[in-house]
Length: 216
Image (cartoon, rainbow, N blue to C red; front, side):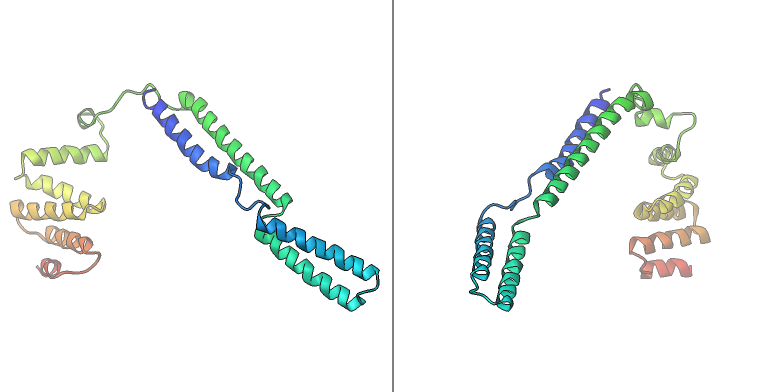
């Protein structure tokens, strides 16, 4: 439970970081200059309706003026923010997302004691190294510990060098192959492995050192 409580706190902080921006009211919600301009254009629409009714505008002039003012009103509406129904839809989606995050958080907290292993004991490295059936990482740690105490063990360097290469630890692989060659002598596999590690260290570029190893 010492792990479960901090993990739950971290999850809560992450959930709030995701949910709060969704719940924040978007800027430019219809107040300010855009709202004033919209009111002006609506007054103009009412004015041309009045002039049309009084016969001061021809049908052609009326349609042209109405279309132009409508275009401007539409542009101001989009500039000032989303339409009310779209803003309402966005708020609904935001609250739904926040609710889903809350359900996920509470569900995780309730399921962890059932599906997880909150009572599992700690597994320090020393205990895992001495385990009867260790995993690959533990086996590597064992070999590294052995080589630190016995650096002249050529067989140990032969074992760990290709593992380093497969794991992408190219500098460690090059050093292991070099030690294997130093202790046990040069062979085709050791020279090729060291050359491959050097090429990988240099992002695929075959350096003079690597080329010399491949030729050997």
